[in-house]
Image 1 (tube, rainbow, N blue to C red):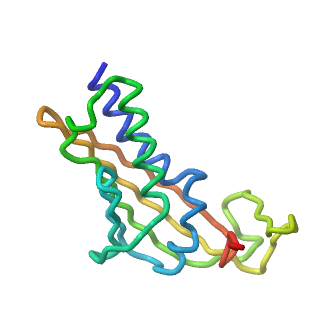
Image 2 (image 1 turned 30 degrees about the horizontal axis):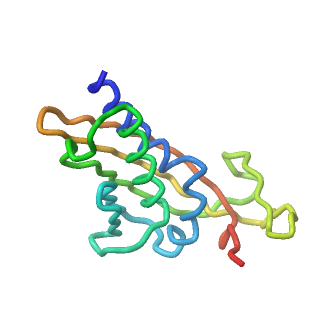
Length: 153
């Protein structure tokens, strides 16, 4: 059971990074652009191209990890590492050339359809290790959103 659960943890960390929770970090990702993020989930530390940088999703990943391990009676101190390496490649795409179907709205509920969208290709690798074994996972995703979205109050 533990072996399967820790593989599930590695898989889920990749999928969470690429999922809806990433929206809270879109503006930071856009600001830094293409490159590689390293995320130490246990320490909630992120680095972009080797420089420490805050990223909102790190806290969400850490919170999920703590809750999931506790729910399955796995002591988090048994983990030597829980890391993500995320390679991002940014570009732009015309609104009629998009690959995704996501709709985006401003704070007033107006549908946003700019002439061009940001396109972010994501390659995510997770590694979760104990003294006994290492569990890895990889996941690729493509996200597209209007530049500067979501707006913050």
